Image (tube, rainbow, N blue to C red):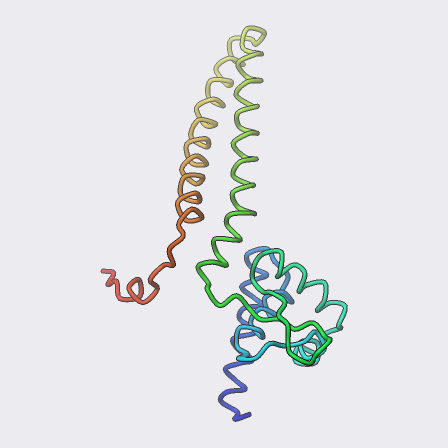
Length: 178
């Protein structure tokens, strides 16, 4: 492979590994996804392990995670008994899958915890001293702000996740700012 192609492949795969780690996934998952994404042909677990110089066990475990997140899928290769994989190339679909499962769940948990806190404060209100009641009101104001934020986040996530249309990235990159 030409050194320019090799350099671009290595930097892209490494960059996706760092990005994966940044958003809470393992670096290996990001590197596997990048390797699959930049390969025009399906790759086996052995090929992935060799390309990334990691154990086949690590590849297998991380590939199951990529499949769960909808970032890769197993494909059948004629005449082969090994498992082969390809990346989901539609990044909008990948983002919807990740946001739909992980972030939406976290926002729902946050809203439930905040709601429970409001209930506890209101239930204890009559038992509190005057200065404690003032602090409780302060807490309620702050919690209301947090609830508004998380309700907005939930609405935004539902809008993104609910959209079945792919985002026109070309149009977005043409937007001039400033």
